[in-house]
Amino acid sequence: MFETIAALATVTMAGGAAGAGYVGSKRFVKERLRFEDQIQRPGAAIVAGPVAALAAVPVVALLPFVGGGTALLFGVAVGAGTRAGARQIRRWISD
View 1: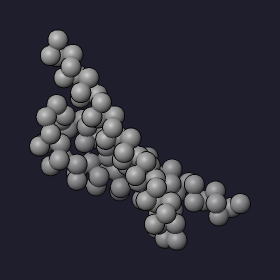
View 2 (view 1 turned 90 degrees about the horizontal axis):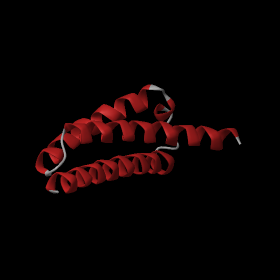
View 3 (view 1 turned 90 degrees about the vertical axis):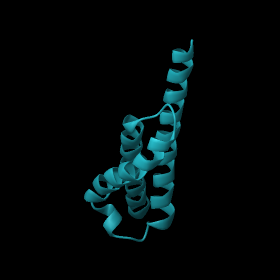
View 4 (view 1 turned 30 degrees about the vertical axis):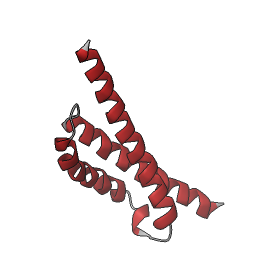
Protein backbone atom coordinates (compact mmCIF):
# COMPACT_ATOMS: atom_id res chain seq x y z
CA MET A 1 0.00 0.00 0.00
CA PHE A 2 2.76 2.45 0.94
CA GLU A 3 4.65 1.64 -2.25
CA THR A 4 1.61 2.59 -4.33
CA ILE A 5 1.21 5.89 -2.52
CA ALA A 6 4.93 6.64 -2.86
CA ALA A 7 4.87 5.84 -6.58
CA LEU A 8 1.85 8.08 -7.09
CA ALA A 9 3.56 10.89 -5.17
CA THR A 10 6.69 10.48 -7.27
CA VAL A 11 4.81 10.59 -10.56
CA THR A 12 2.79 13.59 -9.41
CA MET A 13 5.88 15.55 -8.31
CA ALA A 14 7.81 14.71 -11.49
CA GLY A 15 4.86 15.64 -13.70
CA GLY A 16 4.29 18.87 -11.81
CA ALA A 17 7.96 19.83 -12.08
CA ALA A 18 7.99 19.07 -15.80
CA GLY A 19 4.78 21.00 -16.41
CA ALA A 20 5.97 23.99 -14.41
CA GLY A 21 9.33 23.95 -16.20
CA TYR A 22 7.74 23.85 -19.64
CA VAL A 23 5.11 26.52 -19.00
CA GLY A 24 7.48 28.77 -17.06
CA SER A 25 10.27 28.69 -19.62
CA LYS A 26 7.87 29.20 -22.53
CA ARG A 27 6.29 32.20 -20.82
CA PHE A 28 9.71 33.64 -19.90
CA VAL A 29 10.93 33.37 -23.48
CA LYS A 30 7.74 34.89 -24.91
CA GLU A 31 7.55 37.81 -22.50
CA ARG A 32 11.12 38.64 -21.52
CA LEU A 33 13.34 37.40 -24.33
CA ARG A 34 11.22 38.27 -27.36
CA PHE A 35 13.62 41.02 -28.48
CA GLU A 36 16.78 38.96 -28.00
CA ASP A 37 18.25 37.52 -31.18
CA GLN A 38 20.20 34.81 -29.36
CA ILE A 39 17.06 32.99 -28.26
CA GLN A 40 16.28 32.19 -31.90
CA ARG A 41 19.43 30.12 -32.28
CA PRO A 42 18.92 26.35 -32.14
CA GLY A 43 21.50 26.00 -29.37
CA ALA A 44 19.52 28.12 -26.92
CA ALA A 45 17.16 25.29 -26.02
CA ILE A 46 20.01 22.80 -25.97
CA VAL A 47 21.84 24.95 -23.42
CA ALA A 48 18.75 25.81 -21.34
CA GLY A 49 17.81 22.17 -20.70
CA PRO A 50 21.03 20.92 -19.10
CA VAL A 51 21.49 24.13 -17.13
CA ALA A 52 17.99 23.74 -15.68
CA ALA A 53 18.64 20.08 -14.89
CA LEU A 54 21.86 20.94 -13.08
CA ALA A 55 20.08 23.67 -11.15
CA ALA A 56 17.36 21.20 -10.13
CA VAL A 57 19.77 18.57 -8.78
CA PRO A 58 20.28 20.21 -5.33
CA VAL A 59 16.54 20.75 -4.95
CA VAL A 60 15.76 17.17 -5.94
CA ALA A 61 18.36 15.89 -3.46
CA LEU A 62 16.43 17.52 -0.61
CA LEU A 63 12.97 16.29 -1.59
CA PRO A 64 11.66 12.86 -0.66
CA PHE A 65 10.27 10.46 -3.30
CA VAL A 66 12.09 12.06 -6.24
CA GLY A 67 15.46 11.40 -7.78
CA GLY A 68 17.72 12.27 -10.63
CA GLY A 69 15.10 11.31 -13.20
CA THR A 70 12.92 14.15 -12.01
CA ALA A 71 15.75 16.64 -12.52
CA LEU A 72 16.40 15.19 -15.96
CA LEU A 73 12.71 15.40 -16.88
CA PHE A 74 12.64 19.00 -15.64
CA GLY A 75 15.62 19.87 -17.85
CA VAL A 76 14.00 18.30 -20.91
CA ALA A 77 10.78 20.21 -20.21
CA VAL A 78 12.63 23.53 -19.85
CA GLY A 79 14.46 22.92 -23.13
CA ALA A 80 11.19 22.08 -24.89
CA GLY A 81 9.51 25.16 -23.42
CA THR A 82 12.37 27.37 -24.54
CA ARG A 83 12.11 26.00 -28.06
CA ALA A 84 8.33 26.40 -28.11
CA GLY A 85 8.56 30.00 -26.90
CA ALA A 86 11.13 30.87 -29.56
CA ARG A 87 8.96 29.24 -32.22
CA GLN A 88 5.97 31.27 -31.09
CA ILE A 89 8.00 34.49 -31.33
CA ARG A 90 8.98 33.58 -34.90
CA ARG A 91 5.30 33.07 -35.77
CA TRP A 92 4.42 36.49 -34.35
CA ILE A 93 7.20 38.13 -36.36
CA SER A 94 6.13 36.48 -39.63
CA ASP A 95 2.44 37.46 -39.23
